[in-house]
Image (cartoon, rainbow, N blue to C red; front, side, top):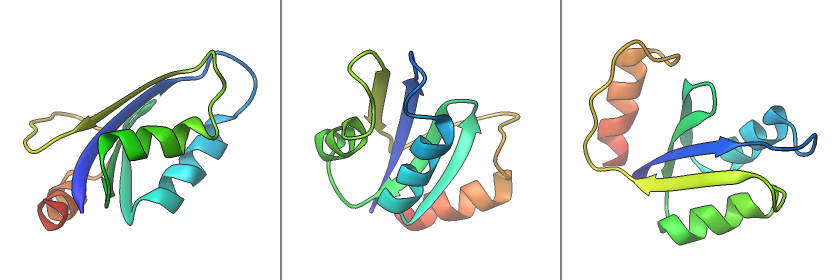
Length: 92
């Protein structure tokens, strides 16, 4: 597993944020919403594979960024910090 940061913008009515959130849960063994549309996911694959899996749900007008992340620093995120630290370390 590796740590990925995903950010997306939905530019239409379909899919919903809930649908994207559910897909992220299906794709990664652990995940956490960092900011409104920024997620951390541990995933057993490449950035391109993760991007392609998400694109199966997103429309052509939606925006998506997938980054492999080996190190990070943060402040005041939506996810519980101690939980993120623990999960981040186990995925790295």
